[in-house]
Image 1 (cartoon, rainbow, N blue to C red):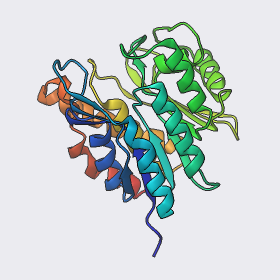
Image 2: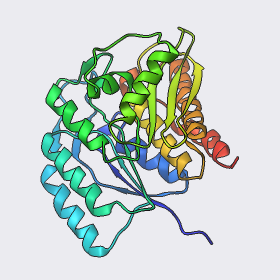
Image 3: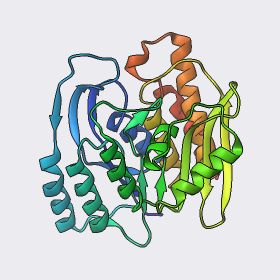
Length: 283
């Protein structure tokens, strides 16, 4: 019997509002992968449009947990990072990469820090530079367009985009160091939305699109990234994994839109999991 693969997800956890670890843990686990968690912070709710949330920083816990795992001789098939709340956490996660990177595992960084042309309020341009350095240690990065252009120190540009522009962004991101890139928020018209992929080894660009659903939905980046990683660890190539993740995320958004659920609460990804697992069995 094949050994079960193991991921460590380094994200914050919000008690309410589906995002970060409350998304990553169920999706990656459903894909048949053991999911270890290293929380960077604990919040009562996510921060998108919900006032009065509580926030407990867990920076001081990251190093002792990492040391304990190192002492135990734990290893991971993938290291998956999301929201990191400070420069100190960037440094601690960078050290975690050094301690747990192997020749055979994957580091996937989602550089969560900005959207819709703006940094999140708690971050500075210097943080974006620090995140770019962390991405240099990754095998795969999955920025949205805002995050990509911030790391490249370019002015934000609204879509629709041209293929030439997207390929220039992908090449720029590749120059940071990662071998594989998935750029989200890509669209060439106002009817389709999705992701562009780039494989440095083969110099190959690919696209995965779905019909655009109007509105802005919280937590979809975490849904996408978790579904993408689950597919990659089930032996799909990068473009195939992006296609599966786009489909899964779009289904989750569509179900939420049809139900007219408060968009602050996150998307209904749970009922899309059976279809996601059907996609994973195609390999």
